Length: 391
Image (cartoon, rainbow, N blue to C red):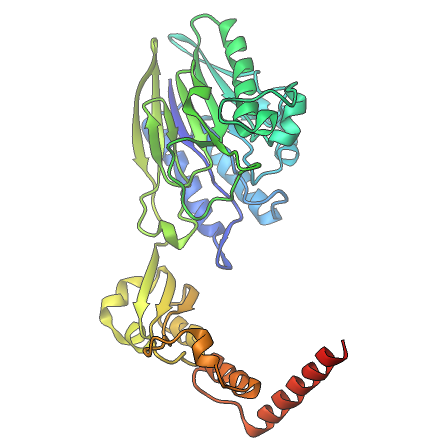
């Protein structure tokens, strides 16, 4: 049995306002080529299928086309909701989809009902755990307030609800002697390395789940962390198929090919995923970025520009986009003082009007307030002072 482990598709996500649907569809549709080339039996998606609870019509259309391509390539699909998804919405038409070979596991009562796949060695039981919000899931799992794992947090911890869910999985697996097992889970497991594009799933300060919670199964396909990584041979994050923050620039993206034989886990190897548009961070003055031929390779990339000009340039984003048309983020790190004085020391002895005028000059890149604007500022400051006295 060969599985393709992926997660955190985040269909509909943007990058600093730039639409990523085209790039997402290109990468996700390409998984069908992997299915065909590697003779994959099933694709498992461990949560965060969409980027929001109410996805756009365009996002749902992308998912429809991607799932159709995966099924046409010959793979069964098993997917679960993550903390970004609405489990109830993702579960719509789950019964009908199952008939076509796309299995959604999005309910707590159904988490111990596996998708059964078969090969020459017998059954492979694939259990999909939806993201379990502790405050909601603990009631469905029958946890009392005092229940919980050694990490603390009681029944309201992510560890407690996942432990209860896995107890149900292990109980069902006990009744299937000889079956090999795979679990999909969306969680922050201890030892994992986070990126800066994940949404925090901390609940009351208790978010990290120990790996021991998942003991007793052959392979655990994890989702939530966007960096591909292995916590053990059988416990892995596939990571997101695209970088979703500039902190992930240069990070290789991949999925895992998981082989199961008669004895359980036989091997795992990475499958590199293409990057339709690179992310890059450029640092320098505006004129350097616009003129230096060394930056030619970034002209078709998503760009985050860090300007080091001493004075904030005028209209920098528009000017940057004349060369880097996919520049989506800009910050200015120049304008530092060299006299070593603190902000309080630099303000000492200066009037409110002078400070306000300097602010205008700062945000305009060195162009100070006109006499008319200084008059308006003076009147506004006077009105504020009178209001403060009257109150």
